[in-house]
Image 1 (spheres, rainbow, N blue to C red):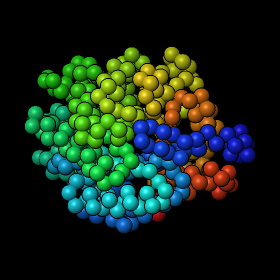
Image 2: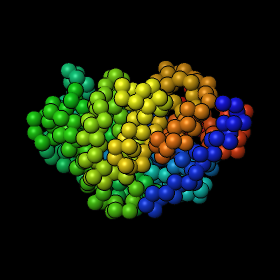
Image 3: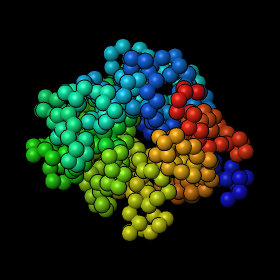
Length: 374
Protein backbone atom coordinates (compact mmCIF):
# COMPACT_ATOMS: atom_id res chain seq x y z
CA UNK A 1 0.00 0.00 0.00
CA UNK A 2 1.50 3.36 -1.06
CA UNK A 3 1.75 6.26 1.35
CA UNK A 4 -0.85 8.22 -0.64
CA UNK A 5 -3.26 5.29 -0.60
CA UNK A 6 -2.64 4.76 3.10
CA UNK A 7 -3.31 8.41 3.85
CA UNK A 8 -6.68 8.11 2.12
CA UNK A 9 -7.66 4.76 3.63
CA UNK A 10 -6.59 5.87 7.11
CA UNK A 11 -9.67 8.10 7.08
CA UNK A 12 -11.48 5.19 8.71
CA UNK A 13 -9.48 5.88 11.88
CA UNK A 14 -10.98 9.36 12.01
CA UNK A 15 -14.63 8.45 12.10
CA UNK A 16 -16.39 9.63 15.28
CA UNK A 17 -17.28 7.15 18.01
CA UNK A 18 -20.23 7.51 20.41
CA UNK A 19 -21.01 5.60 23.59
CA UNK A 20 -23.48 6.75 26.21
CA UNK A 21 -22.53 10.39 26.77
CA UNK A 22 -19.03 9.94 25.35
CA UNK A 23 -18.30 11.47 21.95
CA UNK A 24 -14.87 10.89 20.42
CA UNK A 25 -13.69 12.65 17.28
CA UNK A 26 -11.76 9.60 16.08
CA UNK A 27 -10.92 5.98 16.85
CA UNK A 28 -7.38 6.56 18.16
CA UNK A 29 -6.73 5.89 21.85
CA UNK A 30 -3.56 6.73 23.71
CA UNK A 31 -2.63 3.48 25.45
CA UNK A 32 -1.79 3.57 29.16
CA UNK A 33 1.99 3.68 29.56
CA UNK A 34 3.74 3.74 32.93
CA UNK A 35 5.91 6.86 33.25
CA UNK A 36 6.61 6.90 36.99
CA UNK A 37 7.20 10.65 37.01
CA UNK A 38 4.67 11.85 39.58
CA UNK A 39 6.72 13.04 42.59
CA UNK A 40 5.26 11.56 45.76
CA UNK A 41 2.53 10.01 43.64
CA UNK A 42 0.97 13.41 42.86
CA UNK A 43 0.61 14.57 39.21
CA UNK A 44 2.16 17.96 38.52
CA UNK A 45 1.74 20.65 35.86
CA UNK A 46 4.38 18.78 33.84
CA UNK A 47 2.22 15.64 33.84
CA UNK A 48 -0.80 17.72 32.80
CA UNK A 49 1.11 19.31 29.92
CA UNK A 50 2.29 15.87 28.74
CA UNK A 51 -1.26 14.61 28.37
CA UNK A 52 -2.56 17.92 26.98
CA UNK A 53 -0.01 17.74 24.14
CA UNK A 54 -1.52 14.43 23.02
CA UNK A 55 -5.00 15.94 23.18
CA UNK A 56 -3.83 18.86 21.03
CA UNK A 57 -2.25 16.28 18.71
CA UNK A 58 -5.75 14.92 17.94
CA UNK A 59 -5.77 11.72 19.99
CA UNK A 60 -9.44 10.77 20.34
CA UNK A 61 -9.25 9.29 23.85
CA UNK A 62 -6.35 9.43 26.28
CA UNK A 63 -5.97 6.73 28.92
CA UNK A 64 -3.62 7.65 31.71
CA UNK A 65 -0.78 5.53 32.92
CA UNK A 66 -1.80 3.11 35.64
CA UNK A 67 -2.80 5.08 38.72
CA UNK A 68 -3.27 3.21 41.95
CA UNK A 69 -6.05 2.75 44.48
CA UNK A 70 -5.89 3.40 48.21
CA UNK A 71 -4.29 0.14 49.37
CA UNK A 72 -0.89 -0.61 50.92
CA UNK A 73 1.69 -1.61 48.28
CA UNK A 74 -0.76 -1.02 45.44
CA UNK A 75 2.09 0.28 43.27
CA UNK A 76 5.38 -1.43 42.48
CA UNK A 77 7.54 1.61 41.71
CA UNK A 78 7.98 5.07 43.19
CA UNK A 79 6.66 7.84 41.00
CA UNK A 80 3.57 5.93 39.93
CA UNK A 81 0.65 8.27 40.63
CA UNK A 82 -2.00 7.66 43.25
CA UNK A 83 -5.69 8.13 42.52
CA UNK A 84 -6.68 9.06 46.05
CA UNK A 85 -5.94 11.69 48.67
CA UNK A 86 -3.87 14.78 47.71
CA UNK A 87 -3.12 13.28 44.27
CA UNK A 88 -6.71 14.01 43.21
CA UNK A 89 -5.96 17.74 43.10
CA UNK A 90 -3.18 16.95 40.65
CA UNK A 91 -5.50 14.85 38.52
CA UNK A 92 -7.99 17.72 38.43
CA UNK A 93 -5.26 19.80 36.82
CA UNK A 94 -4.62 17.03 34.29
CA UNK A 95 -8.21 16.63 33.13
CA UNK A 96 -8.77 20.38 32.98
CA UNK A 97 -5.68 20.75 30.76
CA UNK A 98 -6.78 17.91 28.49
CA UNK A 99 -10.27 19.36 28.11
CA UNK A 100 -8.82 22.81 27.37
CA UNK A 101 -6.86 21.20 24.52
CA UNK A 102 -10.02 19.61 23.13
CA UNK A 103 -9.37 16.08 24.36
CA UNK A 104 -11.19 13.32 26.21
CA UNK A 105 -9.54 11.24 28.94
CA UNK A 106 -9.95 8.57 31.57
CA UNK A 107 -7.69 7.30 34.33
CA UNK A 108 -6.57 3.70 34.31
CA UNK A 109 -7.26 2.47 37.84
CA UNK A 110 -4.79 -0.11 39.06
CA UNK A 111 -3.39 -2.35 41.77
CA UNK A 112 -0.09 -4.03 40.92
CA UNK A 113 -0.66 -7.03 43.21
CA UNK A 114 2.46 -8.99 44.02
CA UNK A 115 4.41 -8.10 40.86
CA UNK A 116 8.07 -7.23 41.29
CA UNK A 117 9.97 -4.12 40.28
CA UNK A 118 13.06 -4.57 42.36
CA UNK A 119 12.34 -4.76 46.08
CA UNK A 120 10.71 -1.38 46.44
CA UNK A 121 7.45 -2.42 48.14
CA UNK A 122 7.68 -3.82 51.69
CA UNK A 123 7.11 -7.57 51.50
CA UNK A 124 4.74 -7.54 54.49
CA UNK A 125 2.33 -5.27 52.62
CA UNK A 126 2.38 -7.00 49.24
CA UNK A 127 -0.96 -8.72 48.66
CA UNK A 128 -2.35 -11.09 46.07
CA UNK A 129 -4.88 -13.94 45.85
CA UNK A 130 -2.54 -16.61 47.20
CA UNK A 131 0.74 -14.90 48.09
CA UNK A 132 2.26 -15.76 44.72
CA UNK A 133 3.73 -13.59 41.98
CA UNK A 134 3.74 -16.53 39.54
CA UNK A 135 3.28 -20.28 39.63
CA UNK A 136 5.38 -21.63 42.51
CA UNK A 137 6.91 -18.20 43.12
CA UNK A 138 5.90 -16.82 46.56
CA UNK A 139 5.84 -13.14 47.39
CA UNK A 140 3.88 -11.25 50.02
CA UNK A 141 0.72 -12.64 51.56
CA UNK A 142 -2.66 -14.01 50.57
CA UNK A 143 -5.51 -11.52 50.90
CA UNK A 144 -8.06 -11.93 53.65
CA UNK A 145 -11.79 -11.41 53.22
CA UNK A 146 -11.33 -7.98 54.78
CA UNK A 147 -8.52 -7.15 52.34
CA UNK A 148 -10.70 -8.16 49.42
CA UNK A 149 -13.68 -6.13 50.61
CA UNK A 150 -11.49 -3.07 51.20
CA UNK A 151 -9.87 -3.43 47.79
CA UNK A 152 -13.23 -3.64 46.01
CA UNK A 153 -14.34 -0.52 47.88
CA UNK A 154 -11.10 1.28 46.96
CA UNK A 155 -11.63 0.60 43.24
CA UNK A 156 -15.18 1.93 43.50
CA UNK A 157 -14.04 5.04 45.35
CA UNK A 158 -11.38 5.80 42.75
CA UNK A 159 -13.85 5.45 39.89
CA UNK A 160 -16.34 7.72 41.65
CA UNK A 161 -13.58 10.30 42.08
CA UNK A 162 -12.79 10.06 38.37
CA UNK A 163 -16.34 11.04 37.52
CA UNK A 164 -16.43 13.76 40.18
CA UNK A 165 -13.22 15.33 38.84
CA UNK A 166 -14.67 15.54 35.33
CA UNK A 167 -13.00 12.63 33.53
CA UNK A 168 -14.88 11.25 30.55
CA UNK A 169 -14.41 7.51 31.23
CA UNK A 170 -12.67 5.23 33.72
CA UNK A 171 -10.67 2.10 32.94
CA UNK A 172 -9.94 -0.78 35.31
CA UNK A 173 -6.62 -2.56 34.77
CA UNK A 174 -7.36 -6.29 34.77
CA UNK A 175 -4.44 -7.45 32.61
CA UNK A 176 -0.73 -8.28 32.42
CA UNK A 177 -0.40 -10.27 35.63
CA UNK A 178 -1.35 -7.50 38.07
CA UNK A 179 -3.83 -7.96 40.95
CA UNK A 180 -7.15 -8.48 39.13
CA UNK A 181 -5.40 -10.69 36.58
CA UNK A 182 -3.77 -12.69 39.35
CA UNK A 183 -7.26 -13.69 40.44
CA UNK A 184 -8.08 -14.81 36.86
CA UNK A 185 -4.95 -16.94 36.49
CA UNK A 186 -4.92 -20.47 37.92
CA UNK A 187 -1.16 -20.14 38.34
CA UNK A 188 -1.57 -17.41 40.98
CA UNK A 189 -5.07 -18.04 42.35
CA UNK A 190 -5.01 -21.24 44.41
CA UNK A 191 -7.78 -20.19 46.79
CA UNK A 192 -10.38 -22.72 47.91
CA UNK A 193 -13.00 -20.14 48.91
CA UNK A 194 -15.49 -18.21 46.77
CA UNK A 195 -12.69 -16.09 45.28
CA UNK A 196 -10.96 -19.11 43.73
CA UNK A 197 -12.14 -22.13 41.80
CA UNK A 198 -11.28 -24.63 39.13
CA UNK A 199 -12.79 -22.60 36.29
CA UNK A 200 -11.91 -19.23 34.87
CA UNK A 201 -15.51 -18.10 35.38
CA UNK A 202 -15.22 -18.88 39.11
CA UNK A 203 -11.91 -17.04 39.40
CA UNK A 204 -13.52 -14.01 37.73
CA UNK A 205 -15.76 -13.36 40.74
CA UNK A 206 -13.32 -10.80 42.21
CA UNK A 207 -13.29 -8.79 38.98
CA UNK A 208 -17.07 -9.02 38.65
CA UNK A 209 -17.56 -7.72 42.18
CA UNK A 210 -15.21 -4.82 41.45
CA UNK A 211 -17.14 -3.99 38.28
CA UNK A 212 -20.47 -4.12 40.10
CA UNK A 213 -19.19 -1.87 42.89
CA UNK A 214 -17.71 0.58 40.40
CA UNK A 215 -20.89 0.66 38.35
CA UNK A 216 -22.92 1.42 41.46
CA UNK A 217 -20.50 4.24 42.33
CA UNK A 218 -20.41 5.91 38.90
CA UNK A 219 -24.00 5.36 37.79
CA UNK A 220 -25.36 3.80 34.61
CA UNK A 221 -24.36 6.51 32.11
CA UNK A 222 -20.60 6.84 32.75
CA UNK A 223 -18.50 4.67 30.37
CA UNK A 224 -16.50 1.94 32.09
CA UNK A 225 -13.60 0.20 30.35
CA UNK A 226 -11.80 -2.97 31.42
CA UNK A 227 -8.34 -3.91 30.16
CA UNK A 228 -7.75 -7.63 29.88
CA UNK A 229 -5.04 -9.84 28.40
CA UNK A 230 -4.30 -13.47 27.86
CA UNK A 231 -0.51 -13.06 28.36
CA UNK A 232 1.15 -12.16 31.65
CA UNK A 233 4.39 -10.33 32.30
CA UNK A 234 5.32 -13.41 34.36
CA UNK A 235 4.74 -15.67 31.32
CA UNK A 236 4.10 -14.29 27.84
CA UNK A 237 2.75 -17.64 26.61
CA UNK A 238 -0.17 -17.93 29.06
CA UNK A 239 -3.62 -18.23 27.52
CA UNK A 240 -6.46 -17.98 30.01
CA UNK A 241 -9.13 -18.83 27.42
CA UNK A 242 -8.14 -21.61 25.03
CA UNK A 243 -11.18 -21.24 22.78
CA UNK A 244 -14.12 -18.90 22.12
CA UNK A 245 -16.40 -20.70 24.58
CA UNK A 246 -13.91 -20.16 27.39
CA UNK A 247 -13.47 -16.53 26.35
CA UNK A 248 -17.21 -15.94 26.53
CA UNK A 249 -17.45 -17.70 29.92
CA UNK A 250 -14.65 -15.46 31.23
CA UNK A 251 -15.72 -12.05 29.92
CA UNK A 252 -19.49 -12.48 29.58
CA UNK A 253 -20.19 -12.11 33.32
CA UNK A 254 -17.98 -9.00 33.41
CA UNK A 255 -20.04 -7.44 30.63
CA UNK A 256 -23.20 -8.29 32.56
CA UNK A 257 -21.70 -6.73 35.69
CA UNK A 258 -21.28 -3.39 33.93
CA UNK A 259 -18.28 -3.20 31.57
CA UNK A 260 -19.06 -1.06 28.52
CA UNK A 261 -15.82 -1.49 26.55
CA UNK A 262 -13.20 -4.24 26.66
CA UNK A 263 -9.62 -3.10 26.05
CA UNK A 264 -8.07 -6.31 24.73
CA UNK A 265 -4.30 -6.26 25.07
CA UNK A 266 -2.09 -8.38 22.87
CA UNK A 267 1.52 -7.97 21.84
CA UNK A 268 0.80 -7.69 18.09
CA UNK A 269 -2.69 -6.57 17.08
CA UNK A 270 -2.57 -8.40 13.73
CA UNK A 271 -2.16 -11.88 15.22
CA UNK A 272 -5.29 -14.07 15.28
CA UNK A 273 -6.49 -15.23 18.69
CA UNK A 274 -7.76 -18.64 17.58
CA UNK A 275 -6.07 -19.37 14.21
CA UNK A 276 -7.09 -23.00 14.43
CA UNK A 277 -10.67 -21.80 13.94
CA UNK A 278 -10.47 -18.93 11.44
CA UNK A 279 -6.95 -19.04 10.05
CA UNK A 280 -3.89 -16.83 9.93
CA UNK A 281 -5.95 -13.73 9.11
CA UNK A 282 -8.64 -14.52 11.66
CA UNK A 283 -10.08 -12.33 14.36
CA UNK A 284 -7.72 -11.01 16.98
CA UNK A 285 -8.44 -10.89 20.72
CA UNK A 286 -10.54 -7.73 20.45
CA UNK A 287 -12.32 -9.11 17.40
CA UNK A 288 -13.41 -12.31 19.10
CA UNK A 289 -14.48 -10.41 22.22
CA UNK A 290 -16.67 -8.08 20.16
CA UNK A 291 -18.13 -10.98 18.19
CA UNK A 292 -19.02 -13.01 21.29
CA UNK A 293 -20.24 -10.25 23.59
CA UNK A 294 -21.54 -7.59 21.23
CA UNK A 295 -19.64 -4.95 23.20
CA UNK A 296 -17.32 -2.30 21.75
CA UNK A 297 -13.65 -3.24 21.95
CA UNK A 298 -10.25 -1.57 21.81
CA UNK A 299 -7.38 -3.41 20.16
CA UNK A 300 -3.71 -2.68 20.82
CA UNK A 301 -0.25 -4.06 20.11
CA UNK A 302 2.72 -2.59 18.20
CA UNK A 303 0.62 -0.20 16.12
CA UNK A 304 2.68 1.68 13.54
CA UNK A 305 5.93 -0.07 14.49
CA UNK A 306 7.84 -3.06 13.18
CA UNK A 307 8.72 -4.58 16.57
CA UNK A 308 6.73 -5.55 19.64
CA UNK A 309 6.90 -3.45 22.75
CA UNK A 310 9.14 -5.52 25.04
CA UNK A 311 12.14 -4.23 23.14
CA UNK A 312 11.38 -0.80 24.56
CA UNK A 313 12.27 -2.07 28.03
CA UNK A 314 15.65 -3.14 26.66
CA UNK A 315 16.27 0.35 25.29
CA UNK A 316 15.53 -0.63 21.70
CA UNK A 317 13.96 1.76 19.23
CA UNK A 318 11.63 0.80 16.41
CA UNK A 319 11.15 2.27 12.94
CA UNK A 320 7.70 3.12 11.64
CA UNK A 321 5.73 0.42 9.86
CA UNK A 322 2.79 0.58 7.44
CA UNK A 323 -0.74 0.66 8.83
CA UNK A 324 -2.39 -1.36 6.07
CA UNK A 325 -3.15 -4.31 8.35
CA UNK A 326 -4.79 -1.99 10.86
CA UNK A 327 -6.83 -0.23 8.20
CA UNK A 328 -8.03 -3.56 6.81
CA UNK A 329 -9.23 -4.77 10.20
CA UNK A 330 -10.89 -1.45 10.97
CA UNK A 331 -12.67 -1.50 7.61
CA UNK A 332 -14.25 -4.85 8.40
CA UNK A 333 -15.26 -3.50 11.85
CA UNK A 334 -13.37 -6.20 13.70
CA UNK A 335 -12.96 -3.81 16.64
CA UNK A 336 -14.04 -0.23 17.32
CA UNK A 337 -10.99 1.63 18.62
CA UNK A 338 -7.23 1.19 18.38
CA UNK A 339 -4.83 2.03 21.20
CA UNK A 340 -1.42 3.44 20.26
CA UNK A 341 1.50 3.43 22.66
CA UNK A 342 5.15 3.95 21.87
CA UNK A 343 4.77 6.14 18.79
CA UNK A 344 2.76 8.61 20.89
CA UNK A 345 5.58 8.75 23.42
CA UNK A 346 7.95 9.88 20.69
CA UNK A 347 5.52 12.09 18.76
CA UNK A 348 2.59 13.78 20.47
CA UNK A 349 1.30 14.91 17.05
CA UNK A 350 1.29 11.44 15.46
CA UNK A 351 -2.51 11.30 15.11
CA UNK A 352 -2.70 14.79 13.62
CA UNK A 353 0.02 13.98 11.09
CA UNK A 354 -1.82 10.83 10.11
CA UNK A 355 -5.09 12.71 9.76
CA UNK A 356 -3.46 15.39 7.60
CA UNK A 357 -1.71 12.86 5.37
CA UNK A 358 1.75 14.06 6.42
CA UNK A 359 3.13 10.55 6.07
CA UNK A 360 6.69 11.76 5.42
CA UNK A 361 6.72 13.31 8.90
CA UNK A 362 5.68 10.16 10.75
CA UNK A 363 8.53 8.38 12.48
CA UNK A 364 8.97 5.42 14.78
CA UNK A 365 9.79 5.03 18.44
CA UNK A 366 12.87 6.56 20.08
CA UNK A 367 13.76 4.87 23.41
CA UNK A 368 14.95 8.25 24.75
CA UNK A 369 11.24 9.11 24.99
CA UNK A 370 10.92 6.87 28.05
CA UNK A 371 13.09 9.19 30.10
CA UNK A 372 11.16 12.42 29.62
CA UNK A 373 7.64 13.83 29.73
CA UNK A 374 7.87 15.45 26.30
